[in-house]
Image 1 (cartoon, helix red, strand yellow):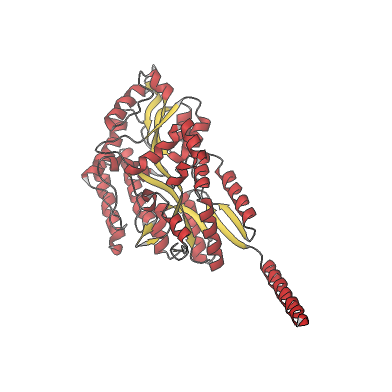
Image 2 (cartoon, one colour):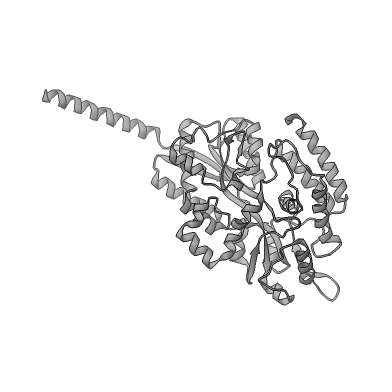
Length: 430
């Protein structure tokens, strides 16, 4: 009997060794993912640090981040790779890319991966405002990570010089206009040396404009992504106000204001107030050599901002093992402590409420209250413009905004034309 047990033991030991050897021969599960670089700051170093820490805890998984350029470049590369049969396993892409990725058959929903009670609690932990651009048709297609809202940054020193209260940023359009008039400086020849306000009109013009439209009482699309409301009176009124800042009040630079150089204009005191992503918060804190403030966007009929930024997606052309490995990483990187640290390090909004209850985040907000502005704006936030055929539907709006801001068309005509073109693009989805 003892000899039988010894034989069984040797056999089991041999089988275990064989299994371990086979697993070793197979190597770790490789998870390639695209990561867009869309704002300033040392973000690649942060991501590389996460990758190293995760791999140390999970030696059976190898992460391969690929820094894929802008969001627009990243979605193009991801879809091209999906069609060629060699897509990434997961990627951070715009939350607004959801319908496009679904229509292309490129991604899978997370619902099949969410199995345990812990998984379900994790999925429910994200802010509802961010999930509006992550779920459709009763399924969850994206997981919020690099998320943001539009906020107002202002130079407190410039406010003091203009006789304005540095602790009272504009809360309404009327206040922003009046403040911008006092903040706009001209030299003896009449040339502007400091603009009152800049709202970027390249890169993501629709996103900044959506803030104006929401504040004036209208969002740009329906929840199903099948209709847009570009020519509604409230939307036309929002564009008219943006044009008026340039032509009527002369407090905003004419022409196209570049997304990428707007923070630099702010640092160099060429502009006293700017609208941009909260994702620029750490960049501003690092580079602004003056006292600055951060505020919610000013209201017209109501407060409001679109949410923005990127979600994790998992691609269909991946193995079950790769999906599970990617899912494990996504859960790992969005745990409260890491979500908090990500917000501290980058300025993006920590995407779940319990991240704001961590000791690190409480300490950070106590010393830097501006960090909580975007979070406090979330109750007023709406889903970012996202539709089927989103790239083209968004492009017709971007083109219309730029036509109005350059004087090529009136706001009403530009948006009427955009509505016609968007209706044509969306007709087959209704």
